[in-house]
Image (tube, rainbow, N blue to C red; front, side, top):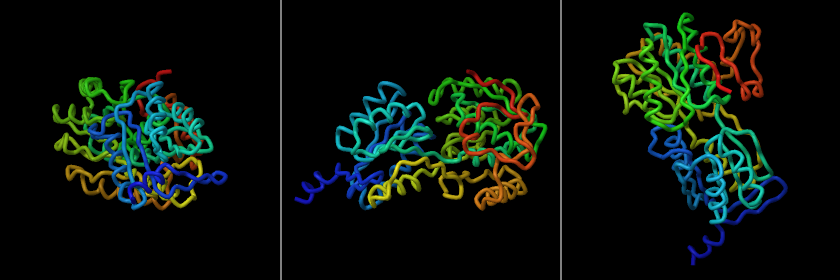
Length: 354
């Protein structure tokens, strides 16, 4: 009888204005890659498992390796039809499909990661990952001997561009002479292409690699060549124990638990969430003991300044690649400017494809 009652309660949502109440949560996640990617999707799935510990989360499920586009629309709609009352879609390219389905299923709460569109029952969320990128840049800048740092980048969207620029600011905190060479792969998950891109950077003298990709292929390239690397999304040291220096990583569970709790309590409303290190959604993986202690201490001090609000990563003076001042001395970018960032700063070598 208890199971029968739960069956009727699970999909039940009660809307009151812009708020939603669900006694029991039946959640679903849509992933762009496999949970075994070791990076982006793996980190989201760890957050899903963390959310499952809440007593009112009766079920959570996921569908992995969903292509962005029409197929995503079909998958999201299918989850809504099956009675899931809280659906998370975890890639930028899922934004429009999520919005479309949200308008058809007003009794379901949708949350989209990394986008900017909303509806009365769809919010969006992300983290200030660039803070971790900045801190990891300090490590990379201290460890390069050639002053050439390679960066394997996925797509030329503001999220990735912002991360590259923040990383460069970190590098230049300790090594103003270093250059960051960027190679684009135009994919989130393709170990072969990522490995080729990483090797091409090592071939031109890079002795430290960083990346904005979903697999550890870049780290493995550095490991094979006896060079250093900065991971991404999760602690990837197991894939390259000698090369790995640190990584900006996600702690999605803290946010997923909050959203589920808000839906359960009837306090949820559609909003743009952009938390940072002060909320512990972004972390830095433990730093390798190969990194000098004074650099580790500097990273710890800078992290504390970020958490306390004393410091903002993007603080002027900052110049673009052409030497033009884009941020005056002491000024900071607004969130709108950060979210729409479409230029490289001085020190980055590479172009941004249209």
